[in-house]
Length: 110
Image (cartoon, rainbow, N blue to C red; front, side, top):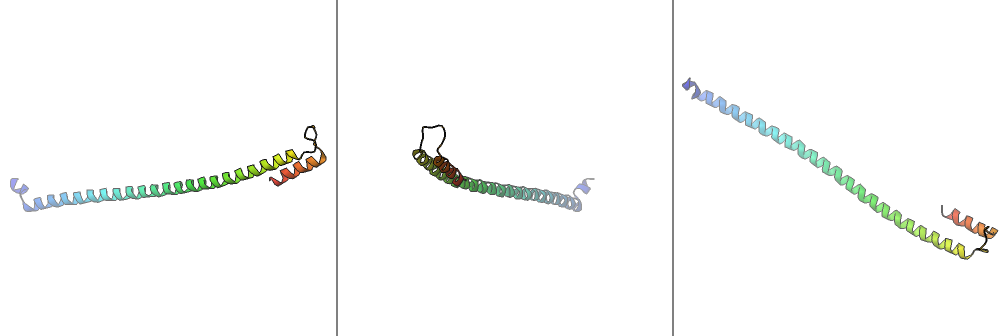
């Protein structure tokens, strides 16, 4: 039995099995790491796209805010001008000219 353990074929077979098992485990580990790395890259790319979309949305919101502020200023100025030009500002009912002015004001704001 002892000679069997020290037989070069048995030792060679055991060494080959050990090396093949190690190579298999190394390959499996590398493959797992490869897929994990690919998944992380995909997640990173998705997050980058989300960040870019967020930046684009923020820029669009800022542009829209500036446009709305400008429109609001224009409407406020027009409303103040209309208020100054009322024919009879103290009455409950508007004069026909005031009604036309207000209608024009609201039709141009749309």
